[in-house]
Length: 556
Ligand SMILES: [Zn+2]
Image 1 (cartoon, rainbow, N blue to C red):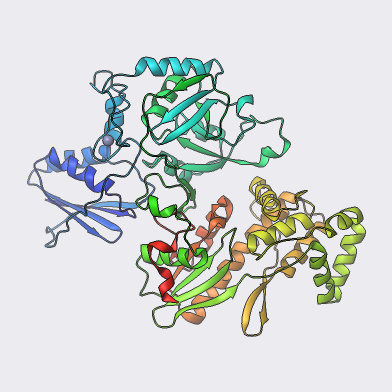
Image 2: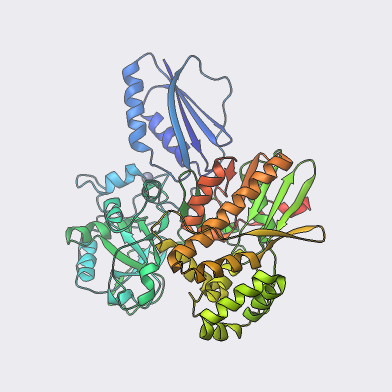
């Protein structure tokens, strides 16, 4: 009998390939591994079906879940394939422990019990150290943290400050490490897909809304999302394991310097690496930031980039879409936003620009007034209803070279009075946070309309601001209205993509840019756009993927 295992696996790290080879090593089976684009196939043949069954069981035990794994299947086939593929030689990427090494380190009878340096050819951080049990060190460290002390800890990829959630972390930006998934499920509203990603071997950060009240003295943080992850090296894993015995299942972790009482440096890390953070929809997952465990970690940090073009082509390259007609949506928070269409036949054209410019809030109001009679009336009503607010914000001026959707949300946030900040980034963040606190499923419909200037098509920012003002006058509350602003934008993008498909027969959609970090936007986009289009994001690069990798520029 011949079994075919298939994995839709979007990673070049070779983790699965190596684990499969290791597992094959303990069986006597004829086998073949074939890698073709994003699919990995394993064929195993034996006359002994018990042997095949025990191999399959063993493999499922050894293979960790990965954020790059999208589908698996196993079936009986008639023949072994003719071709075969050689595995490329790439060096090991710094990576959390694999299931096998974890089992051994946690097994009292194993020689590697509590040995933080234990690793294999698949996992670990390639740091040398004395092979022994470090149990006492972790028992003591856990005791100190349980007593309320802050510890300065060397992990295998950087120095961090850790401690119990509470007053001590209030003044710094921090993330949370959880003992297990059940604890995260208890304190957050993580979806099933988010839980699966948190448990994957990459152990990424996921930004989640939590009901933990650890920052009660700051009024605005109730709306904030916090990054959670599980331990991604043995230092953190063994620490959390000991803390769990003392009844502590969550700790804060931060890079920011805190007065610390304990220093814990069993090892010197080779290289400081930023852990990855991902954002997850029902159908897609994208890397928001970080480099640890990614094959392009050196390049991904380079500043040499042309964001709105480079990112688009990095996705086309990663998914081999050069022969397709691809619509590209660039929604960076920092840079220019636009929709491009690429095809081999006509090259790359700009379909829609989200460019606009205002000098001040007064400029915004004046433009609305001069656009038509109803605009004039709207601003009058707004001014009469909120006279002090109107006066106060009218003096706000902008010093922006270029506007985009995120900054438009910043303007909306200021005009509606959600933000005391005059900085558009900060103002937009308040609108985002309000939207993420909304518990309903539908917001009001905010207009995103197009206008034509000469032969080019632009987004008309005034229509968005105008509809938002009307809903404010109609007393729609902040959370609902904020949600509507973001939701309507996704619907706008989605309908633009439908038009492009109709007109230009596009067969793929690529979305890039830091606005994808927004959990609601990402999951709604993933869901909505997938209905009519094949949707792609960067695979192994952060979502603002860099052009230097692929020289995407040459195509212009
Ligand atoms: Zn391992």
